[in-house]
Every structure is written in structure tokens, then in C-alpha cells.
Length: 257
Image 1 (cartoon, rainbow, N blue to C red):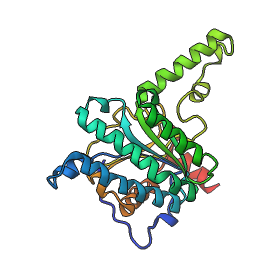
Image 2 (cartoon, rainbow, N blue to C red; image 1 turned 90 degrees about the vertical axis):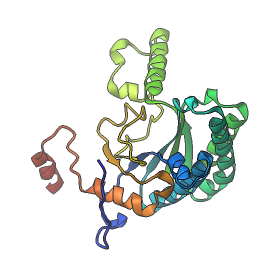
Image 3 (tube, one colour; image 1 turned 90 degrees about the horizontal axis):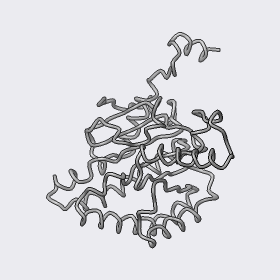
Image 4 (cartoon, rainbow, N blue to C red; image 1 turned 180 degrees about the vertical axis):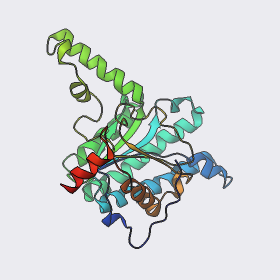
């Protein structure tokens, strides 16, 4: 679904139903650079500024958690040079942004199979998480070497190990108990999913968690996704009726109760 909703003076982020958790696939960095006859890494660097703007906007609007898909488990298939540059950029951003996140009360969490990263990068991630762990403002999840299928399989391995050790039984396994083994244990599922860049796919992102998430797709390339574009997405979200299997009449009755 592509939307061209324009925010008006009567529709600001401050007076609409704001999602508690927003998840974003930041697509279009490479195409943004190509349009400017630049190398793809130029687009990834420009995308970092978009991240800063969106993190700031989420903090200002009352969003509790923001999850960004920075590097998927499938992205290793990209040219080796580009992957190397992305890893270097990740290192640089962690170093430059961690103190700013600490200052602005943002808690950083990096989720995914981090064992594939260099020891230096793993240490940098751990340092940034440690620095911001006591912050109680916006939770910023960075999905790196993450895949939705990996997350589910990894959770099932943990469940199997606990069953084998006698810490739980097969009968104890439920949606609720399995949820506790996933990467987002303790964090509400996303209310709003955004994908920039014109593609309309979930692309192995948060497969378990997006079951009832509202989806929003935009043609805007990620480096151009600013606070105004985020506002459009939130306004679109606020116009939707979330029924979770109930009828529209039931939702309206509960809202009016």
C-alpha cells in the first residue's frame, strides 16, 4: 500500500493515535546514491542521517520502541566490498552515536546473530549497549545479521534445550512461552511496520512479530525519509481500525465504553 497522505495543521503527530512500537525496513540507500551517480556506500552514509532524524522524531512523538532493519542475514550475498564498507560504517556509527544516545535517554539493543561479526565489532556493540542500558526513554533496536526465520529457529533450539534439561515440558510450549525465547522478549510487538523504497515485501523481517502489525509502504527512498514522512505514516496508522479478530462494531463499543 502506497499512500500520499499529507499532514495538515489539524493532523500532527501530537494529536493522533501514536504507535507504541514502529519497525522499519530502511530500503533505497543504493538507489538513492545511483540517482546521484555515487557509489552505493554514499547512500548508506546518507541513510545514517535519516536514522538520526527518525530516532529524534520517535522520541518527540511518544513512540516507546523503534526497530530498524540495518543488515539482514541475506545481505551477506551482496558484493564483498559493499559488505565490508557496511561493517566499517556500523563500527563508525556505534562509536559516534553511543554517547548521544546515552545523553538523549535512548536505550540501544542490537538483535541478530552477532557471532558472524568480527570480535572488534561485537565488542563495540557490547560497549554501546552497556553505555545505554539504564536509559528508560525510547528503546532503539537495531536488527543486524537478523532474519525472522533465524529468530524462530533459534528460539525453538532454546526451547528444545530446556525441554531436554527438564526445565519445561512439551505441554508448557505455547505462543506466550515461545515469545519469551525470541529476540524481542519483553518488548510489545510492532504496531506499525514501514518499508521505504517502493518494495512491498516483509523480506524475512520479524515474521513472528508482524502477525497483527499495520503495514505501510512508501516509494520514498530511505535517505529522503524525514520527520514529515514519518508523520504521514503515523497519521495513516491512526486512521485504521485494529480489530484483532473482532468485529468493527465490537471495537467501536469498547472504545466508547
